[in-house]
Amino acid sequence: MARVIDLVKGRDGIVRVAKVKTATGELMRPVQRLLVLEESDPIDDKEQIADQDLTPIIPSSDVISDSPPTVADNQPIILEEKQQQFTRSGRSIKTPIRFKNYV
Picture 1 (cartoon, rainbow, N blue to C red):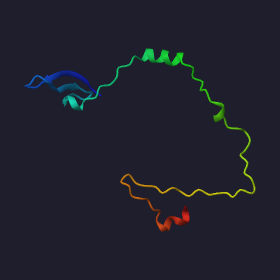
Picture 2: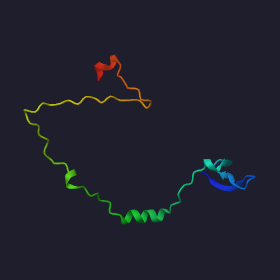
Picture 3: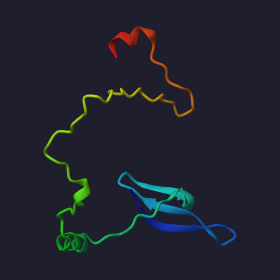
Picture 4: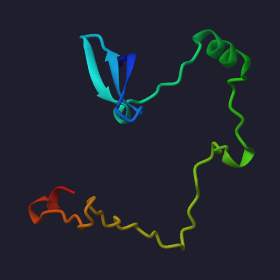
């Protein structure tokens, strides 16, 4: 993080470079590479958090019952197959044959 010390204008009068002070020294950085952080007042944030009710409201449909789920004896159990996974480039991931016994 750094603090802007000075803005440097170009020949056309437009600010394109800023002089910033970091913990280790001063740098000249292009304005396009600078990110503006929001300034927040920590006292106001604590007051807002204290004012909010922190207990979550859970709808009755999301409440889990204490009884275990029941499965009818005449219904077959369907095992889910693993969905095929893909890499970021779109190639499918195949498990090597030597690892089939360990899965």
